Length: 114
View 1 (cartoon, rainbow, N blue to C red):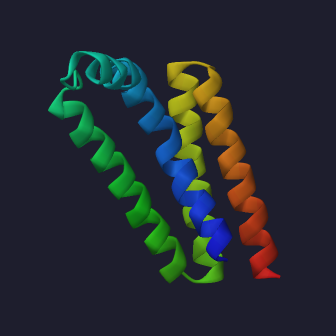
View 2 (view 1 turned 180 degrees about the horizontal axis):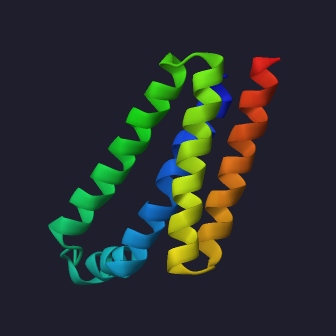
View 3 (view 1 turned 90 degrees about the vertical axis):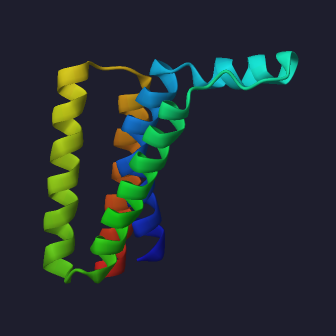
């Protein structure tokens, strides 16, 4: 169960976090900071990343607290929202990574359920 919930949290945070990292060029900003002495990542990017990760952790916590039937409903609802977001924003590597994380989470949760 624990492994499934961890993968679920990663899956929920993965796509939006990767989009924020890409939109704000976080990796470039951090690399520029290493060579130039200052971090070139805006505070807004860090706040968005914190919000996305916090929301994913909260949903994972709700998944643990739910009944087995409620778990699958919550899982299906979150997966559907991410699928809709992926369709609206287009197919890209981040979508495939998030889909893989959802698959790992579903497999682990089904195994824990029996």
